[in-house]
Length: 115
Image (spheres, rainbow, N blue to C red):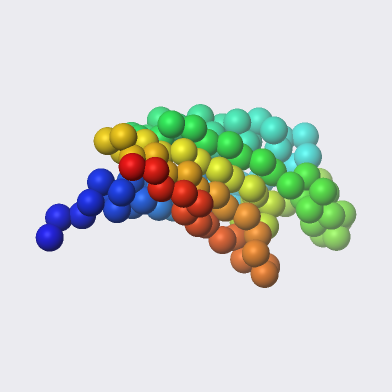
């Protein structure tokens, strides 16, 4: 049985999240570089097929707290600093997705599928 268009669209969303998270996790980030890093992440993932839009927000309050706790000028990017939303359009099926912290874990989810 072949996957449906909606299943393919959700798969594409998963590929984009995996790429975004694992490509950028560990990147050195500071409050001064947070905006440019978020923009780079958005633009990199938007290059992928079927990706209509990506919005990356870096939680600067959490970032600043982690830096202060470590006594450094930067920290490594992890999911706890990210809020992400993506729109995927695969053959007319639009999938809205998001990633946010839930119970201490960066949870990636499908928010809606419109065929």
